[in-house]
Length: 158
Image 1: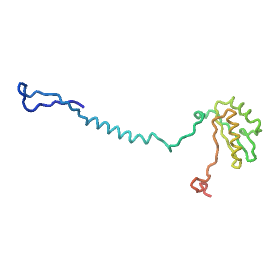
Image 2: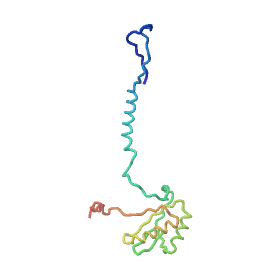
Image 3: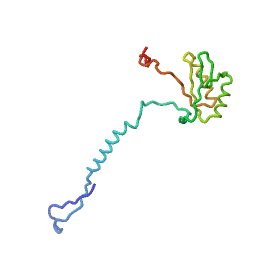
């Protein structure tokens, strides 16, 4: 993007011959070259910036996953509707108080909820509400692998 010098052709009366004048035109070729290189770089890099399928995730108050410094708490709902914290049977009416006491002693608010497949959805949601009221906002639902796929095939092979 420099300026060049142009020699004036022809003679003017009373002027010196061969006098050089600055060229008023800008050479844009290097500028275009740089812009094309940047365009190619951005075209290659842009798809790499989006990872996964674009979905609008729900907004929650849960923070980042804490590190695994302590054993995660597990709450289990059995097929008959009983609730266990780790391996201890707990009555439903005392569940929130026990969870609050446990949450006060723990550094993380992470809890795993295991429920039998025969337990109604409403019962699972009641326990999730109790977990939230007890101070556990980071709830992970535990499932088993090998279930049916959404395309109608059976991933378990049977």
